Each structure stands twice: as structure tokens, then as C-alpha cells.
Amino acid sequence: MGKPNWWKTACAVFLLCAATAIALPAQTFTTVHSFDKTDGANPLAALVQATNGALLGTTQSGGANHFGTIFRITPSGTLTKLYDFCSQGGSSCTDGSSPKAGLVQATDENFYGTTFSGGANNNNEFCSSTGCGTIFKITPSGTLTTLYSFCAQSGCTDGTEPIAGLVQATDGNFYGTTGRVGANGLGGTVFMITPGGTLTTLYSFCSQSGCADGKFPEAALIQATDGNFYGTTDGGGVNDMGTVFKITPGGTLTTLYRFCAQSGCTDGELPQGALVQAADGNFYGTTFSGGANHNNNFCDSAGCGTIFKITPSGMLATLYSFCAQSGCTDGTEPVAGLVQATDGNFYGTTPNGGSPTDVGTVFNITPSGTLTTLHILGSQSGDGFFPVAALVQDTDGNLYGTTSSGGANGDGTVFSLSVSLGPFVETQRTFGKVGMAVKILGTNLTGATSVSFNGTAATFTVVSSSLITTSVPSGATTGTVQVVTPSGTLSSNVPFRVLP
Image (cartoon, rainbow, N blue to C red; front, side):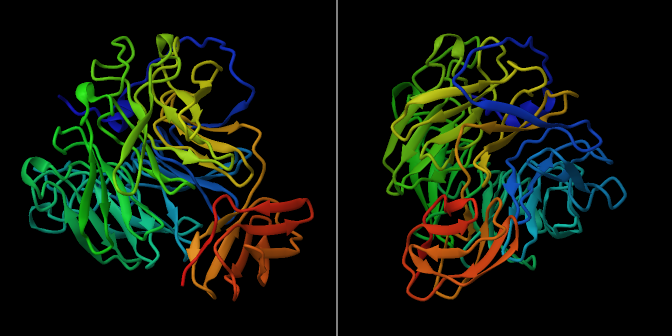
């Protein structure tokens, strides 16, 4: 069975569908920006909220050199292009090209990310002639440094073509995956890279017979509360339908689940999105296909995709099978992972379904599995098509996302969705020892009079309306961080864990 890759499909398909008005539950969907090629085109990745209150993201094409951009956008829609990839001259794009992943803002205030191609090395046996991909750092003002070019080792044992972004771990280093190659052929890798650019390959997939340990990791890792990293592979496993895995910072990998373990693959297959660890300690995610429902008009015979929950020990439960509604109005074939919002529910996107437009949906789902379609793409003029990226909840309470095409110019959009959730604060990081510096992101923080960690007062500095700096106070315990402002008390979206 061929492995579908929606990051490819979304770049190549530009269908125009008739917009049809459809009544949905009360919420406000707004197209914040329509790309026009000059400022980028076809964003495939989630946005990240920066300490200055803006959102940052990437486009996989467009820009001055047609190989993608990095941009900054305010919630009100003012977009600034920070970088055009392939800016260093020549055809090799040594600074990278075609980023398919989002950014992470590190503790040094800079942003880090990956590009799918470009870089100093190319190997036509394993990757395109434009290069095998890079890891980069970019300052908030737009100065980019290439930290690493993949296929630096013989046979590309360090991996090629990273599709996923990075996560900064508690040790200060970054962890990520490459979608291809490694020490065992084409399976891909898990790696660690220091902020200075020293890369270590922690694991090469297909280390087990028949790639029972998985292959083709296309989603970002997450570091869980136990300190380990969790992720998915889009192939491999006993049935070649993908896996969920755990890997220690030292590189010991455990396969937690192999999809298509149930008759008819009702448990799902081919996960392409990242996991999210919820407040209950379990992980939630999506699969591109499989599940209980099939509809050849909207998805293939393998099933229309699922949402699942999996415990840290590997017990999986299917919460929802897409195309449960007539005409697949609930969406099909989710590519992106989920985000748990401050109301406790999960929010996500599908790039297909939402009949009659069939260009995608935005939905929410309760932890118990009740799904509500919030917006059907194509139901408003210029609202964009084919969302393949996860959503992010801004500290203003709204959800923000991207569509890979459509919009006013056909090149994709940035959108917001208001579901009447109030503002909150977000800590960077979400764990730390007493005395560790912590940044608090928020909205309208000017004039704050109090910061507390689970009731223990902390000293703090209001840097701007969107940023407070503080440190974990002596006597603090694990719990909610609260900031008292002139407009009210803001609570953190997740508990802050005080480490021993």
C-alpha cells in the first residue's frame, strides 16, 4: 500500500471548490492573512507564540527565491517577512530550502527549526539535488545561522529530509527526527543537537527485522513529564502502518503500539501528527487513515482516519473514527496532531472532508470522544483550503492556524478561531527547580501586581505587555501559576511542575 504524504499533496493540489454556507455552532472564524507568494506560500506548519506577543511561522514555498520563508504576524494580521530561504546564492541553497516544520523559541530568545531540503550536502541516492535538509537558528530580528546540514556522514547515516520541527528539552538541547535514511537504510532517525550545532544520532529506525520498531518519523517529538520523548512513525511496525514510540534522552527506544493491530485497522493507521500529553497524563493523537468508517468519495478504502488516546504504558483506545457523518461533514484524513485548550477539550484540523466543499475542517473533541465540527473550510469566501498543520492557542484565548492553499490569492492563509475562551498565561518552561528563571507569556500584562506559583509569591519584572520574567520561588510546589493584572487574574494553561 502506497504511503500518502499530505505535506506533498497539499503543496501540489490547488483545487477550487464552490463555497457553500453551512450553519455551525456559534464561533468566529477569521482569515487573518492571505499569502501572495511574495511573502510566502503554502504554509504547512503550526505557528508559535513568541515572547513579544506575535506569532511566528514558516512557508514551504514562495518568498523572494521561491523556496520558502520565515514570517512574523500579529494577531491583528500585520505580517513581517523575516527571512527568504535560498538567499546565499547558487542553486544549492546552502542556507536551506522548503521548510515543512514550525519553529520553537528557545530559552536564549532565538528560534530554531528545520528545512526539508537545501544545505551544504546533497546525495541524489537519498535526497534531492538541492540538499538533504538543515537545522537553523534565527534571531527575532531575522538573522539566520545554519547549524547543521544533513547527510554530513557517509551514506547519510545522520539522516536526511527532516519534516518535523524541534523540541528544546530540560537539558537545554534540541531533539528531533529525520524522515529518511539513517544507519539502516531509509527508516529515519532520532537526533539531539546542541544550541551550538553539535549533532548526535540517538537512534536509527528499522533496527529491528521488518522495521518492527517503525520507520518514517514525520512528526515532532514531545518531552513528557517523565523526561522521556514520545513520537510516532508513519510506517513500520508489525503491519507497516506506523507506531507510537518512547525514547529516552540517551537513545533507548521502546515501541509502545503498532497500528492496524485490530481487524480492518479499526484502531487507525499511518499517524503523521505529533502527540500531545494531556492534563490527565495520557497522550492523544491522530491517524491519517484506518478507523471504523470508509467512504471512497472522500477517503480511500483503508478508512478515513482516527483520533486516539494512548497511556504512557502503551494501552490505546480509539476515541473517534472520521467520516462518521453523512458525506464526511466531520472531516477525513487528519495529518496534524491536536492541541488541548484551556477548556480541557482538544482542537484540530482535517485537510479533507467537510462536504460539500471537501477541503477540510476545524473541530474540537472532548477527552471522552464527542466531536464537534467548528468550521468547514470553503464555507466562507477566501477562508483557505487544506489545513495540514496543528492549531495553537494564543494567550488571548483564541486558536490560530494555517491553510496550505486557498485564501484571496490561492497561496494559503493564517486564520483565527474564537470559541469564547478567555485569556490566560503560559510559562516557558512548564517545569523547573527552585531559583530557575521562568518567562511568562500573556496578553495585557502591563501593571501586573502579583505572580504566584501554586499560591507562593514570586518576585517578577514586567518586561512588556506580553512578557513577565520571574524565577521559581523558594517553597513553591507544583500547580497553577497566576498573574494578577488590572483587568483580572490570569491562570496558566497547564500546571507548572516544581522539580526536586
